[in-house]
Amino acid sequence: MNQADVKQQYDSFKKLGLKLDMSRGKPSPEQLDLSNSLLDAVGSFKAADGTDTRNYGGAVGLTEARTLFGNLLDVPAAQVAVDSSASLGLMHDVIVFGLLHGMPGSAPWVAQRPISFLCPVPGYDRHFAICESTDIKMINVPMTAGGPDMDVVEKLVAADGGIKGMWCVPKYSNPSGTVYSRETVRRLAAMKTGAPDFRLMWDDAYRFHHLSDEKVVVPNILDACEKAGHPDRAFVFASTSKITFAGAGLAALAASPANFHWWQKHVSVRSIGPDKVNQLRHVRFLKDKAHVEALMEAHRKLLQPKFDAVLEHFAEYLGNLEGVNWTHPKGGYFIDLVTPPGLAKRTVALAREVGITLTPAGAAFPYGKDPNDSHIRIAPSYPSLTEITQAAKGIAICLQLAIAS
Ligand SMILES: Cc1ncc(COP(=O)(O)O)c(C=O)c1O
Image (cartoon, rainbow, N blue to C red; front, side):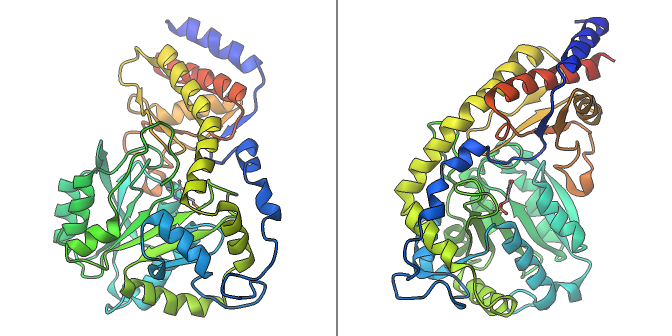
């Protein structure tokens, strides 16, 4: 298609006067409705062991909530803390505790500055925001089909004791949908690190968020680390943000006994105890792993058609364009649209002019800087199916125009 034709299509699309926000991977109202009975699920306020959930106490969470997450994460309940209403805060806490107090047996990270974290890219902007706000230098690591490029990772961590951590979204990564292979998990657990207090920030945000019949399983990182002789290497995080209510759910941290006790010690200073009423109603509503999986199937029924619509439209409008490709995730919340170098920002700006708000180009990279300016994060979950279908077409037209002009 020549430039004039694309421009004409773009102008007609603009006349539709759309107003679509696809900037964040939020669950849709229909998805949130799936958990409405949570609002009445608490019944009595007494937990199984007689705890009055209305009162203070229980720094690492209610026993039945820890058991539920233990089963979901495949970790003994004694090594699971349930806390807060979303997991990002727990990740922030681990980093701030590390900075102020140091990891078990090590000096505070602040006393060891300059320090860095490895950041597989593209990745999750809010992970990067935590590092930026705490003055932890970020080092990009390229993603491969099986997770971060392990040759690069192993080389970097072995040589530099200032590298204290690494962000990992092992399943259906945000935004690429990448799944870490067995070999990647094994190498992450086994690699030699210059820093004895190096930690994997294992963010299992999309553990149950499948979009296909293939329910991908990633090996248990705590087991892998223990087996490799590095039992304290990983902190695992998860939440029900995209299972029940986003930001009003439950979050969990799982860790080795030493890391767990470290966490318990520091978290007991920051709070007299979490919201156990919310924990109890979640346990009564979610019940067990089988019920969680059934609920996730209901989410999938709402989400999958939206992903399919985007993928179909991209194939139709962008299929033959050189340098353009996109991911076909088996789960999670995002599609990564890759443009020819230098065109992501321009495409996002063109989309804004036709009423489609996308995540700013570059957001999936540390410091907001995509060195090739070529990644656009597509978040199909929130708009309706009709809207997302229109938006996919609109984004494709914008990219066509960016290429043609
Ligand atoms: C990789 C990843 N981790 C964490 C979160 C946020 O989780 P929470 O709501 O539990 O803070 C998101 C949300 O998009 C995410 O994509």
